[in-house]
Image 1 (spheres, rainbow, N blue to C red):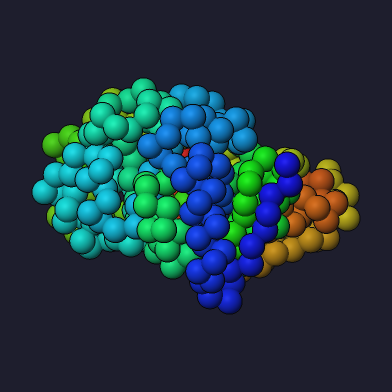
Image 2: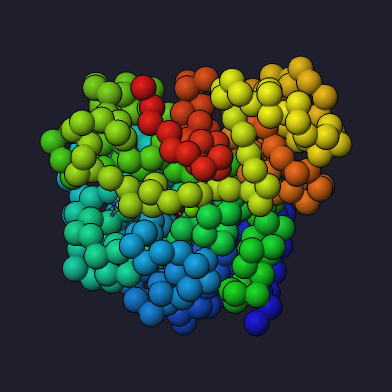
Amino acid sequence: MRAKILDVRLGVSDEALREAATVLREGGLVVFPTETVYGLGANALDGKAVLRIFEAKGRPADNPLIVHVAEASGAKRVAFVSELGHLLMERFWPGPLTLVMPACPVVPTSVTAGLSTVAVRMPAQPVALELIRLAGVPVAAPSANLSGRPSPTDARAVEEDLGDRVEMILDGGPTQVGVESTVLDITGEKAALLRPGGVSIEALEEFLGYRPILPGAEEAVDRRSPGTRYRHYAPRVPLFLREDESVWEKVETWDPSQRAYVGIRSPGASFAFVHLFPDVESYARGLFSALRELERSGACVIVADWPGEARVGLALRDRLKRASGGSYMPE
Ligand code: AMP
Ligand code: MG
């Protein structure tokens, strides 16, 4: 099977979206743009369709999926929404905030990976919203990459990974945020951050009136995001972080023609491939496609700049650390 690619960059064509919605309703897979990264969608209420997502990505079955809805009221079809849940939706939806809430029984166990909770979000992307609305069902969608690879932020990256594994790809151009959503567990007394993402911890703290429990904190032992256990976002060539002091010794041993650098500050050493961004937001937006591009360009090793934690920097640190094979615990 070769995916049908529909260009939806110049606005939302009703016909293209209706066709995509039909594929979803009939149990097929449709890749669609969101403001964070591209999503690999299936009808979230159809357990068989959802299993195809895991197959296509090579995703471990114990890593649950985010359910996408087109309006806040859609969350009630799949989750028990608390007062706090309503307030957070009112403030942050549509947008890159995923809420983990108690799951309704209609949600297949393949979506929740057998947990009693479900993750839900409403994306801020007109194509995604219209597609979900037309499908008339909640849409389960992880990032549209092969498991472990950098998340796709344009249609080319999707095609590279999944071009022969899905029915349809909606090409909406490059995504706005570039890193995935923030995942916030609101099932406990205090909200817990499971994964940093597009909504900053500063914004959450201001809204909640307290700092959410952070991953790695003592109180967080039973509040975990299963997906954050896995090596993720990794390019095919080794990636080193600039915060690691031994990196410059390593750089010396590589031929300059093989070295690639990505980040905000200039590298201060000779690199054949240099990808610079003006600020932390554009670094986040461009990181994953830069990694894929550097890989294609023949670089053998990548050094990545280490941003500050503010704004989207926390999410960026998390992705960079995982891409380098480690895991990041915020301070
Ligand atoms: P992805 O869509 O590939 O970016 O991954 C979705 C993220 O949400 C993963 O890190 C999952 O572990 C996390 N997630 C999804 N559902 C739940 C849940 N019910 N409880 C905790 N984390 C979840
Ligand atoms: Mg992913």
